[in-house]
Length: 292
Image 1: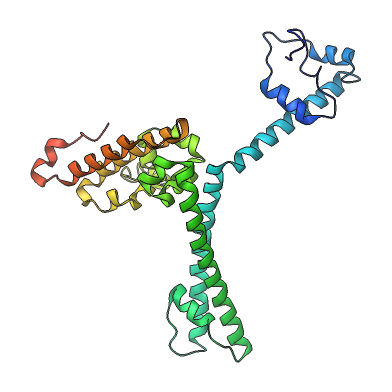
Image 2 (image 1 turned 60 degrees about the vertical axis):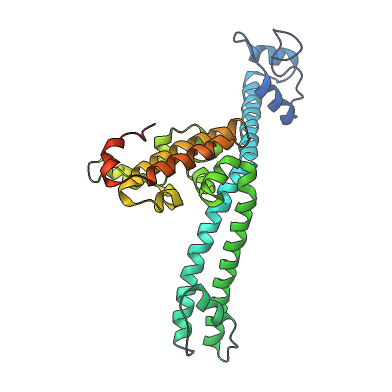
């Protein structure tokens, strides 16, 4: 288990109170066959008895697991996940607060516009009563949250190309971040087949389809991509399949290589040009051509 020899226990070069050293041995060590480590640990003075050995082993294993989880949470793709979720939360709450603020302000002031911009105008007013102060303050909170949403979008725009250069270029930073967030990280996304990438974010619709209550969804959050949204309705299924296939390849290139692959982007543009050039007459001749 350690460099001391094939019969050494994992604990033999680890001070009992050094969890960091124990973690390294646990993560990097190996043994060809099981050993009677509890007995060896007692003989080596690592533990007073077998019960204490198992207590120390449990503590070391728990520590190692906890540290791995912390490191993964601090990884760039995880920060991207938190950023996009925070941005969505900030936008949702900003809109809700703005709606409440302008409705309230409308009962106190003349000419109050709706939405976040209306809330910004309310926030700039000079209140003269307690009710006005509260409405103005609420409007200011909505404006602040909308500013935070914009700053989070800028952060995503900087992080996404560094974390996933191909995915960010192909999907745009925000959609790339959403795909990574829904998948749980860049590595899980890279391991998903294109058919799964195509319907990420449409889990409710997919469940309804599997339950026999709805047709199969053609796309999930990739609908926001111009290649899908901007394609005529009868060709959106083909566009979604083509885009999902290239997004899956982009995620794999980002995770396993980390280098921009120009050919992926060229191939996608060429495929989309072919799909969009279709006419009603030749559509039937190309059915199934996108199921790559």
